[in-house]
Length: 72
Image 1 (cartoon, rainbow, N blue to C red):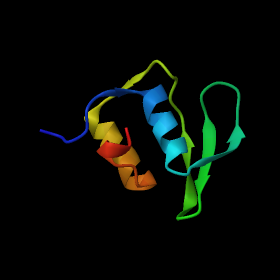
Image 2: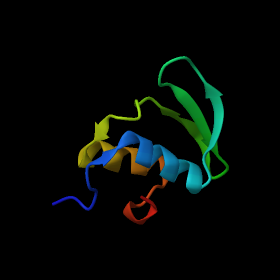
Image 3: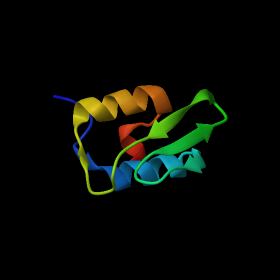
Image 4: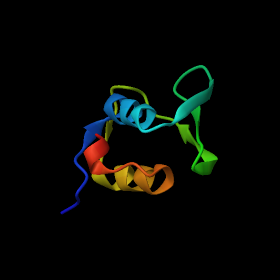
C-alpha cells in the first residue's frame, strides 16, 4: 500500500505553495510554472482544482518537488 492518499489537486497545489514553491507564470487554463530555490529545474503544475490525484501520480510529483505526505 502506498503512503500517499488520493487527494484533490487544489490541496496538493496549496501544499506546494506552503513548502516554498513560487508561481512564476500562469497560462490560461491549468498550466502554471512553479520555482523553488532548491529545485533549479522548476515544475509545471497542470491539474484542474477539482481533479483527484492518485497515489502513483502523487509519488511522481513528490519526487520532482520534495513534497512529503505530511505536507498535505
